Amino acid sequence: RGAAMPEDDYEDGTSSGEELGDDEGFGDEGSKAYTMNFRMYESQFPEIDDLVMVQVRSVAEMGAYVALLEYNNIEGMILLSELSRRRIRSINKLVRVGKQEVCMVLRV
Image (tube, rainbow, N blue to C red; front, side):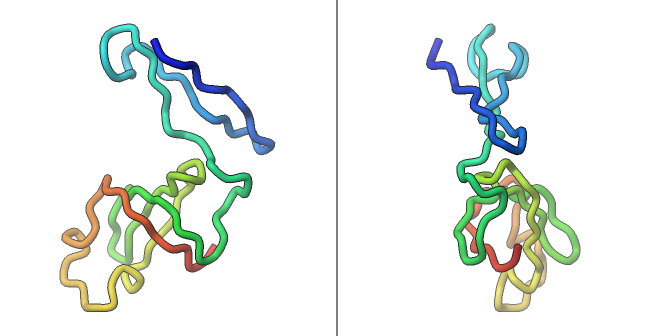
């Protein structure tokens, strides 16, 4: 039913993928699926000016909390002032929870 994913472990203890149970997988009964819980780069954190894929986790009054998808879903924050150069009337119209975006790293 498909190729098995490697179970390589990184030095810091993170793994390349975790197997889900039968009830959590996609598709027909008995199929196995893997979470996207892995790091694509050797470094634990991105460098300044790197472009990263993020997924918006929650929206707060002062900005948006995101998960860095290429770095084992570590949490990052985008301040309201960094979202747009123009005045933002509603942050919820600009940023949607669950949406994936490309962002540039300004600070680590």
